[in-house]
Structure formats: C-alpha cells, structure tokens
Image 1 (cartoon, rainbow, N blue to C red):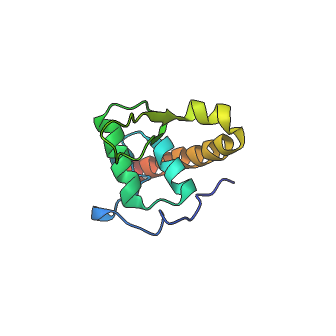
Image 2: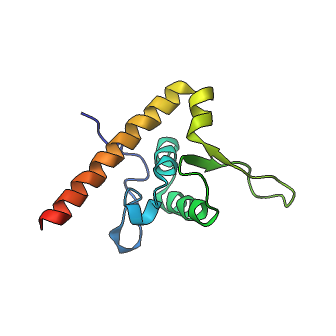
Length: 116
C-alpha cells in the first residue's frame, strides 16, 4: 500500500482549506508537488510554483525552476522529471511512487464527490 508522506506540506493548509494535492491548486503539475513534498517545501511555496508553471506554460512534468531569480541576466529554465530520471533514477522512482499515490487520492475524491 502506498501512503502519502507526512512532510511540512501536509501540515500547512492553503486558503479555503485546500491542499496542494487538489487539482485546483496544482493545475496538473503533480511533479512539482511531489518534488516539493520530498524536499520539505511548505504548501504555499509549492502552490506558488504550480501557479508560476501554469503562467509560464511549463512542461507538465516540470519539477522545479532552475536558478535563484536574484540576477537579472540569470537564465531560468524548468527542469523536468525526464532529466531527473537520467541523473538520479533512485529519486525519480521515489517521486513516481508519490505521483501514483496522488493519482489514487484524486480518484478516490472524485468517486466520493460523484456518489454524494
């Protein structure tokens, strides 16, 4: 049985009691959520990154935006799950497991909503 990890993300609620696992919050950028939970980011930061990814039309498998953003001439690019898989397959498998758990959670919530 796959379970959702309990990091800093789980303990922080967003406005209107939404979670970063809610499709209205992550906008389909599940990889950003999984990455953020793995590194211990707070929910507000993860939601902000998902919003930024949506605004910039980042690839759906984006995991983070490179660079710090502190320098005007700095090139920032969305790093993807594909590159993670090449460079760190063990971490990529961990992220994949989290993604599967998120998908199951979304399906359960959808079923519960449809049955009520």
